[in-house]
Length: 199
Image (cartoon, rainbow, N blue to C red; front, side, top):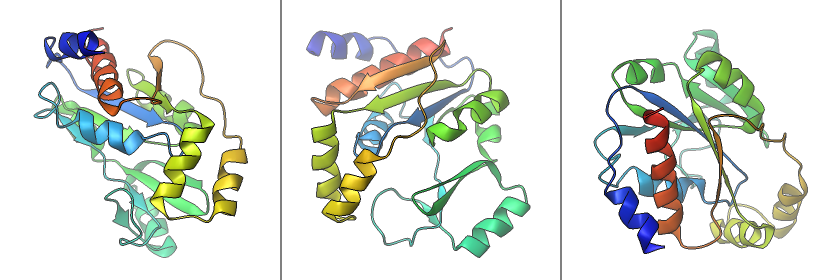
């Protein structure tokens, strides 16, 4: 474990060009924890930006620090071209702002948590983007979802039964299994991101 961690710390991320990192994976996989941990590490701290998504969820609903919007407000923003990517999931609308293009142009590593349903669309718009699919065992997903306290046991069971679109295979698509210690997953996330910037 510490060998991997030490090697990643010793190998800083290249600063040559911007990189879009598309993070996907089921609820409860620990995507937020891995992303938040990675962007505080020295290799990414001064360069990485986590995209703040617009979601039709109240601001005080818990979870990530999102921009809250009503469905009407979301539709207006969409009509104004404010989202480079958008989708619906579990009764909510999600949007990724077009401003990420400016961040990429200035050499930033832009990390966006998206739905796997828009991976194809995202890679058409951003051909050099990488996809990191963060997963975990079903029992771990159930435990983490229960710990969030946002859904009933029946809702969690229904979410776990849901079969999302498969993540495509191919170049610049990686799977990160977040079943164990968080610091190991953070190290792997940084390693994959660093390798991608040097390709």
